[in-house]
Image (tube, rainbow, N blue to C red; front, side):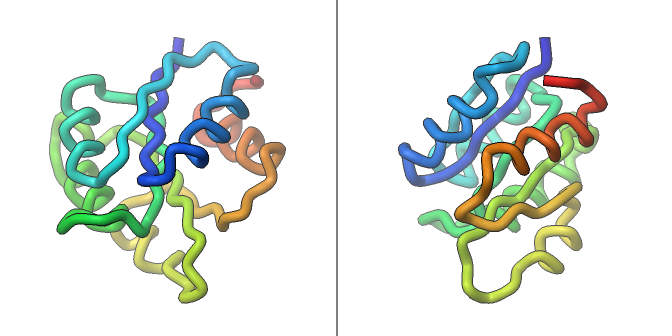
Length: 123
């Protein structure tokens, strides 16, 4: 069973992503901040992290991605950045180590296709 960590400060977005992934064989964890995401990634070593960029606190999604990818314990985690930002942060997310970027609002089918592609599975 694949482990997925969903990181977003908006509970409704976390629920939408979790519901979208409910069709697969996933253990889903949720975090509401970048710092919590880094902590949970070290604890659970998820196969995939779906990470919002804009979150409150000192650790946003870009910094959390950078910390996760720079830690030997979590460097293998694949990360999809979610962004609702009007400013294109795709380059920042990829430079921090993200595997892919998905814009909000997103199509659940697009999210499933990215998850399948990154994890090499069919949901």
